[in-house]
Amino acid sequence: MLTYDKARLIADTALSFARERNFKPLSIVVLDARAARKIVLTEDNTSIKRPEVAYSKANGALAMGSGSRSLMKMAAERPAFVAAAMQIADGALVPVPGGVLVKSGDQVIGAVGISGDTSDNDEAAAMAGIAAAGFTADPGVS
Figure 1 (cartoon, rainbow, N blue to C red):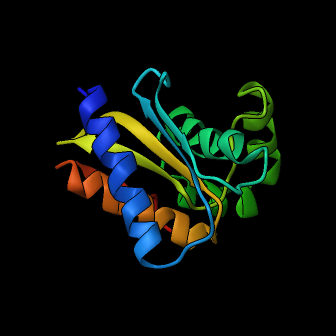
Figure 2: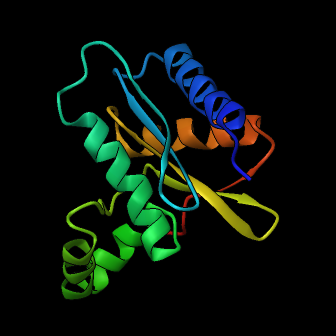
């Protein structure tokens, strides 16, 4: 189970990871397995839609059962399918890295979405946070 305390640890660690590396300001969204928002953390000086992008990276990963790096590949190979999935998800699916599934063993217990820097950096921060909470990060394969 992804508790509030674990979700907060994920977000705080991801933010510390980003600050140590001078990433651009981030929005970090941690969702539980039901896609309920556990944490939404948005730094000063982010653009106004960053939280929605972060949410959509995480939500898309949960909806499709795959980290958003895999969704990027899927979008390139099967654009019509991903477009349909986006419509079904009411637009809350962003197929670029930065949406990472949170696993406890083989069970998906949530997802983290981060937006604000490069997609690869967003993903790296999410993975650092998930590892710090003692879970396994699944960003999808490229």
